[in-house]
Picture 1 (tube, rainbow, N blue to C red):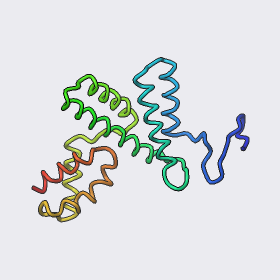
Picture 2 (picture 1 turned 60 degrees about the vertical axis):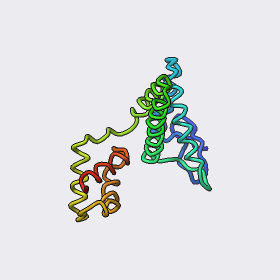
Picture 3 (picture 1 turned 120 degrees about the vertical axis):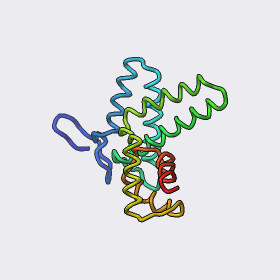
Picture 4 (picture 1 turned 30 degrees about the vertical axis):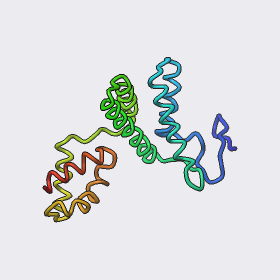
Length: 169
């Protein structure tokens, strides 16, 4: 324990203080606000997202606090799960469940960086192809290796690989 101005902050050896500001703190604050507003959808979605973040924090040999970048990665995975579940429910003829999954995805999207437009993605792929000197579909992996860090959560991997294939094919 340490005294931090006007409050006492609990600390664990080797971990940052538990009150570190950031994306996780914003998720928790928004969860509290949605509970007060009795917004069932947002409350359930943020609880699920925070559970996924906590699960990631305790995964591995030692518990740790996630950086904002790592929290974004977890949220990206959760958003992808919602998109895929909505597609599966649509295919199974369950539109009401698909709507719920899409609504949850919309809540998670509030915390993710804006997605790249098609023309921006095409330009990044064009640059990566020029840098790698790729001439055909056989060099897909080399181009993807250059594009993925530049995209960094702003486009789905499937969308990126489709654009790379389109330009190489």
